[in-house]
Image 1: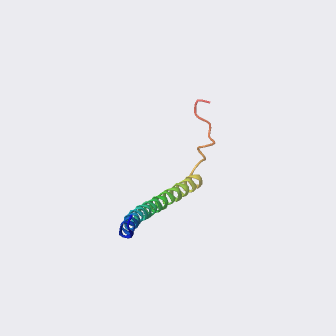
Image 2: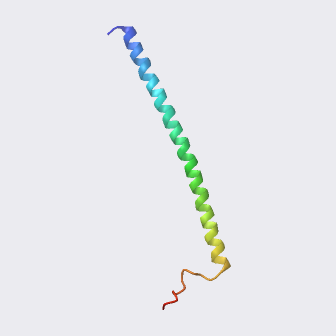
Image 3: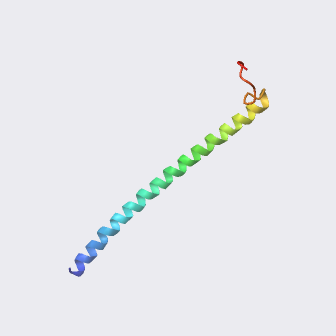
Length: 67
């Protein structure tokens, strides 16, 4: 294998690695956005639970009507 063939092989491998790194960066970015969305959803649910706990009777501890 000549030195030029080795350089071409290295350049091909480098191009594949750059593509892989870009794909991984995109995936990490998308997952970060999804985590942010889920955290916002959890915060809204927690706020909703707090508001309902303060606004009315505690429905979780009430006996069902058939008892």
